[in-house]
Image 1 (cartoon, rainbow, N blue to C red):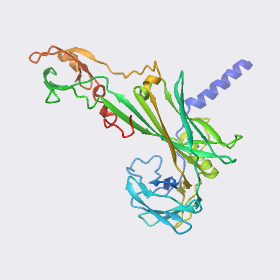
Image 2 (image 1 turned 180 degrees about the vertical axis):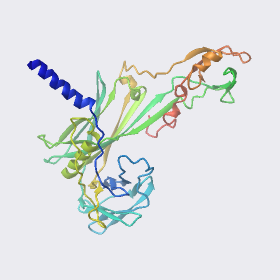
Image 3 (image 1 turned 135 degrees about the horizontal axis):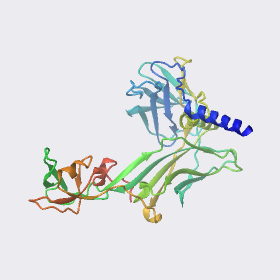
Image 4 (image 1 turned 120 degrees about the vertical axis):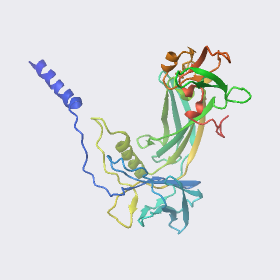
Length: 388
């Protein structure tokens, strides 16, 4: 009897956890224009970049552009220093390279095109320690990348990181040809060279892809005996394209206050760790941005002064033997037959080697995916300045 009751209880839990889902729309009221969102920090030793945008309602598909344009943005010092930021597009505002006084406090002043004014709290200069090293280790799951840093003070350190990945990848096939089709019969009637000199089109064989971090990456030495951080900043799955040729990651490090750390922790939970039945419920964010023209209006963001430190490493495919990356490209030997050509979705793209007579096209090698002969559809064929 106890077993039957236990099974019944288990079935009930499973039913309510997975089979009985009800859409929930929270009754949250917000301004028609949304709340102002301020992203970025005041860079004490370089250009400052601030992004301004507006929140949008969860079920509103009518908003095409939520960036805040044409605002007047300035960095203000308690000593009355003033440094303007200029909009560079897409709601992004950037200053000239700055060298701020380490003995002064600074804040952000924002005046929107509609006349609203927002101020951040004054922030003291915060020194960021150098990145001691970036390192990596390989295991059965792939490659893990670690950051190693330490502070010189005997106090807890709070850190925020961002990174940009860049990797080289290759299109597996070359091509100097293109097909001319008969639209009625779908038969290849001619083949022409892309280049006048009949050379292989190698310009789109080698490309590079850039991806910036989109998640919030934090760590603290608060529970440690010293301000020494060794942290797994990101992981690359085994056989991933990123290390198919050559991979690089550049990491930016910022020392932040305990208050900024707590704010970003809460923001991370609200944006990245919700959605499951056991996840924490969203919490009210309380940053250090205030609307002075309407004190009751909420603004989202935490801006303070910090140094920016950076480091870059490279990982070559030769350093991870047996990586076994599979590009997924297929090359077919096809006959010039209407039925066979119709069955190949997305068209056909000739590759080399090529078997065809200039007069009577009988058979040829081709791939159904243009990415397999032209890498520029997924990235750039312009070599980055820092690439070896």
